Image 1 (cartoon, rainbow, N blue to C red):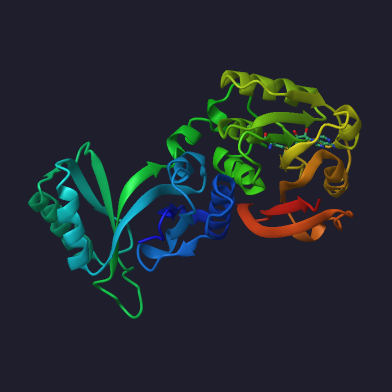
Image 2: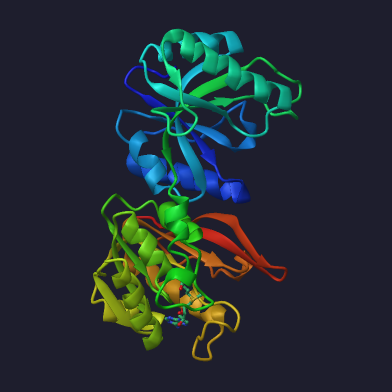
Length: 355
Ligand SMILES: C[S@@+](CC[C@H](N)C(=O)[O-])C[C@H]1O[C@@H](n2cnc3c(N)ncnc32)[C@H](O)[C@@H]1O
């Protein structure tokens, strides 16, 4: 199905924010393999599936553990009409393993009932066994959406589960489970996607200059990055340290300072990426400064904080409040992040240091 030596995967993105999820997938795949293809939509399984092709084997097994805004990563086995899929399942049954077949959501009901029955039967015919509880192999059939127009009832894709995104694990790191909690805390899912969007090389360094309770630094550490943080508020610095240590994460540096003091405090240290959620509204104390002024100071510090080609990802409540980019920085993208409530929307911005 893919060119010799290359490895394709099908990724089920989470539905809350598809453009952001797709962007995260692209950034994450490029970190694992700079020669990977951009995500391509698949014709079945609803609007949430994408195909990514890696230039070599290896990265596909790491993808699910790194993504935030996705559900599962699949290894494609066959595509075509149901007969083609049945033939493929007979072959797979030859392994003698136990298996179950599930349907990706969105398919017409009749087909969604029929397809797993047919494919399960084919697996038995090939010599395998069915186990719906804890099978050795987990197959997923992707059918055309019920709403597909024109309907392509027989075209479908068959894949095997490679890995699930650790959403329960991320859920267990939500604010309510941490020793230090504040209402400003970012959700682990959004924090992880921001870190991924920054595209820092594996094992690189991440700085959060507004670390608050440390949600971004925690996800960055779980992705294998070295983490440093800063905040103007001493309570936040202590709280971040408490939250990181509760997860056995030791930061490289944590400094209490205003963002405009960061360059001198960090004495010329450079980072592969800066990922942050600057103050907005009244909830997160700015010491009386306007949030726009604080954001300007953060953006102005970026050329001195980032390594060449390093990236910053940040959340802003209004993209028009972004200051003009200083020399040497390029505004790469602005994507709708999340609607916090009726009057507060947050956008995800990525900025790159040119050289
Ligand atoms: C929106 S909160 C960050 C929340 C954080 N992402 C989390 O998940 O907990 C913004 C943080 O910026 C800090 N802050 C506000 N103004 C600042 C400034 N001028 N320099 C440095 N930190 C500042 C606040 O103390 C607050 O902790």
